[in-house]
Length: 420
Image 1 (cartoon, rainbow, N blue to C red):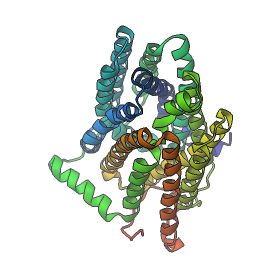
Image 2 (image 1 turned 180 degrees about the horizontal axis):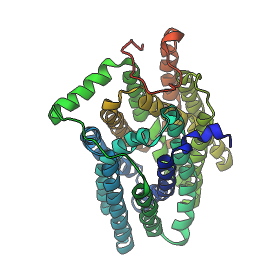
Image 3 (image 1 turned 90 degrees about the vertical axis):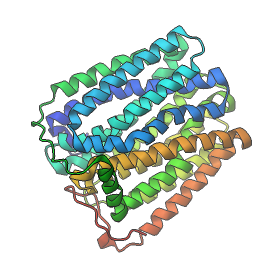
Image 4 (image 1 turned 45 degrees about the vertical axis):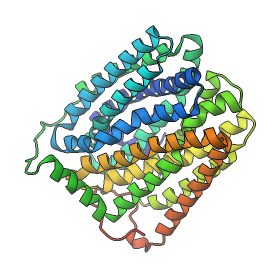
């Protein structure tokens, strides 16, 4: 691999972070796959699949703003260390619940909600900390792209391993392996050498800081546009992934292994997209990438919706996932590099709030729609809606080229110029 594609690895703390997170995320995706499979096989309900996603993401939405304030007020490193330990405890309890009880649907949903609360504090702290772990701030966009590569490689391998583990060893094994996967991430955090934390002066109460975060996003046009379009995608398009167990079991007549392959194809497409982003030159326009990737995602879903052959469906999923993950990664990159450092935790928490509200509501909506009109027409409509969102990006591209930022070489505040 070209050394420029991994230039963020020049930072020791980031290398440690990347290594620990890579192993932990593999276990996380095994657990996510197992949760979906157990819920669907025990309930035979597409609606309950949406509820299982809702159970994890909605608590994150409720507490994400508080998580952003905590990330801006307190030591992000210590917050992240605490949330990782709590996530390990949640995975251990989930392992015990599934092992000791044959039908643990409600226990799974309750523990998923607990994980959602933990994630509300984990995500703003983790995303904000990435900036601090990179010594050369010009490498921040590369670090975000490498994070996406790590995420999608784990999404490629995790579901496939989960499918095999469920069939041969049982679902509890997936949850147990996820518990163990938190050991390396805790070790990597403890091994970091960070400068002493200097708390910033606190002159406002929590509510005032939350209002300040909302006002900053509202008056910063680029960030407002990014978060708004993320909400549309999260509500109308991204929840297609919740329907993969239905495709595996009902459309293709497969098993947990088939489900793992479908989820793995999504991970492969995302991995290819992430590797593509690591190769982009600093002068490349990320807004053009956003528009193109959204159209690619829509085209992939349109092709996948009614495909009767598993092998061809996997190929179309790779295409759709390439567009999906490229779009979401570029959004995160822009937020990380455009936001003022003092506002980073709150802006990321607002980003998380929109995502964790839109996706669970969209998952319930998609689950209900597929129950009523069928899973294939639902995915077809999602593909069409993705093309519509792509048109919004094209409309946004009509802004004069000199006003449109490329990949920032150093973090800058976004301007308040209108993005229409």
